[in-house]
View 1 (cartoon, protein in one colour):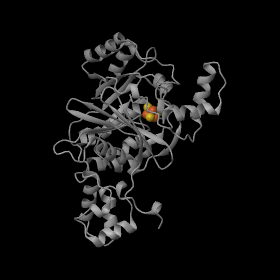
View 2: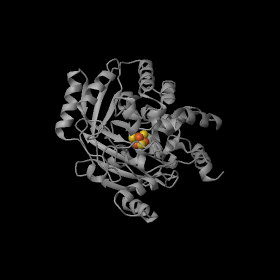
View 3: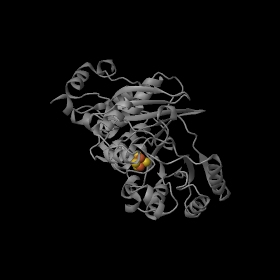
View 4: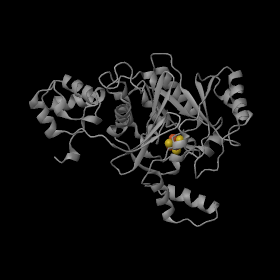
Length: 386
Ligand code: SF4
């Protein structure tokens, strides 16, 4: 068996690991031991796993690997945030961002190299799509954040208390790998994060939301960004396939399957002159009247290839006030890490685009700027990011 075909212990949830050990004629608790070594102690060298017999260690070295993606660049922000660039097996590079706040540390991680959905306000969407990340590449982001931030040696609290699947990609289009990684995040033998502190954010892949409760009880955030189908379809093409009513119905179904009282977060990026009018806020309040939720307003974070603008402080405040007056719990996301291109909607990595979408967006931008597009523009942008 070549190294590449061997089972990767770093990318296996507890069930798969137990069945691997069973197939090897070992007791299932060996799986729990290996999980703890890798994900609680940060150990990737089988020889260090001293509570496992020498003969089993030799067998593991021969028949399995422990492989995590590489961190290839490190960008500290002036505001205490941190962005890392991770190289995945497909050759693309994805980004993750750590956001420390009073009482918690949130890690925003990626699920795909690029994204096929092309939401108009999102830099990742303009990069096109390359590949789904593997379980090891997804959980590897949390592993690396703990490694870099001293989490594995932490005596009391680890620096990463919350994980949000809001980085590059649509998590529910990489369903199996994302769910296995999410469940590892919450596994007591791995990171042991609370289900309230692990959030899957989706643009609205309705069939996947409908089957979500069979696989997890993690928290959910919905990228809504518009109060009606006409506007939402303009800025989020997925809405043409799964309109708002279907989306909200699927989310209600998932939330009602959870044993505790939790509500989803509605994410709404405020874009000047597009969806930030007072009437949009009133329509949003009406739309969500029978839909228990919290609303998170995200002032648009500018990036190249987008003409959108961030609304004024007054427009943001007015929008918020209308929703609060309608009794919604509303937060306005503080922009963090924008000095390192790590703010919401700005993540781009370096995606080897299979879809040629990035070329089309750059061509459009070049035409708008009055100069001809050449393929070297694309390379220049990619190189710039490294
Ligand atoms: S907002 Fe999310 S779903 Fe939309 S293009 Fe960006 S990464 Fe993809």
